[in-house]
Length: 575
Image (cartoon, rainbow, N blue to C red; front, side):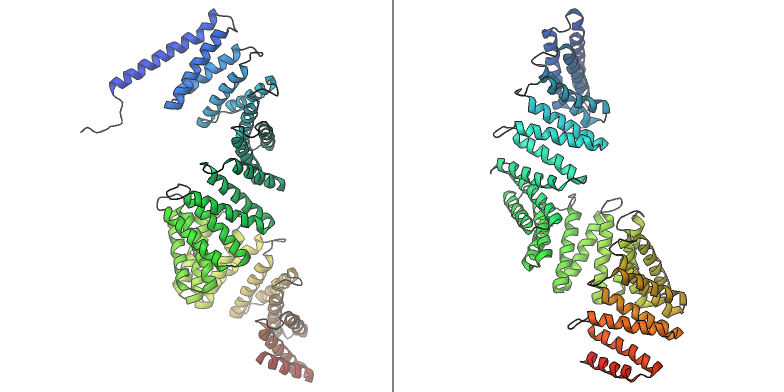
């Protein structure tokens, strides 16, 4: 038995060398023959074109760039020798175009791209409306323009490509064999424009085109399951934009049909399982039906089973399954769901080693679920690990990251929680620093600015309680006032801001004895109490806080009605 060394035998090299020499001689003979023929000699053009066709075929079989380069040269000579009125000129232009487009797959010469756009435009100039290749020229021009858009990002190229695809589609009426291809090309271009910030009507048209493509792919068409998945995906996109439930319901139905067609070992089955699970989880988030959550978990587990290592999407399946398991834990409180979610996130993180683009997401997710388990069991090592992971996430994250303020806030929350457990001053100092940085990034009109103001103020209050620095107390009051101004009537956290501001005003009154602080605190407590009507879970706390503030004022002024009201508030709180 001999080993295959991967080398070419001498006999093979001789054969290859002979073939190349013969090819060179044929090309030289063909390209120089025009010196003895008129410029527009049809036999000369046909000879060149036949040779180019042979080289093109050889390139497709063997992939040798030399064959492609010579074919391009010969096709160009054919074009130069054909008069504009030649009935076969469109075919010649099309031949040159297809080899140029293939060379673009192997390189990035802008001259090739410009020529690829020029050729179909030239063909369109000489093609009558009834020309059989008119739709092909429109389609080719659209593809070349789309390619240039993907390289240069010029919006006009994308818009013109869409226009060309529309015109090609109009010419390819059913049962034209290329109608399905035109629909898919137009869908892809419209979808690209949507990704660039396109108009809502682009989304509606994509859905319409997807429906038409699906109608052409009746079972047992091999591409039907792909069209079902694509239609479902774009319906989910429209649901997220407009919130119309029927879009989500239809998307789930499409994903189910696609899954039925993709029986094991279909290569796309895991994708369909993942897509159906995602849609079901979305519906669970809308209506809270437990069976949707259970089915989503089942689908994600099946997808994970099909994506064994080293499948490129395994980390995605691990992450998705972990997220829904954590959701089920929040619903039912089963510890094994939380533990399994942590295990899944750990496995996902191991697969997303730097510089994986989703490593940051996995770090954040694992830290979050560890904090959740700490909140349940109080194990210090869970909190310590969460903080360590959040440090890694912040180190990976660029300062311009759109979610940086959230990462900073979450890290600060974890540090503040650990300070409450261990009393380590450096945790409190670092938490305050993180809260301050998050607040800077959440300038108005950021929707989470009031949350940052409140968190920062609470941490400052805590430091004042440790060190007694008056500046911390004054700054905490300022932060709470700003948070309250942002939490206008009907804001779900307005009563919290009123209560927090009242509490810190009472603290300052206890330090300075300024009556206006106590008066304002009583006013804030009264407003908070009005918002916390029974059966609000914090009504008793507000009753008690107001009673204490009134009792404090009674001790200052001796007004009997303050004492009576304080007693009444305490009774109500006790009840």
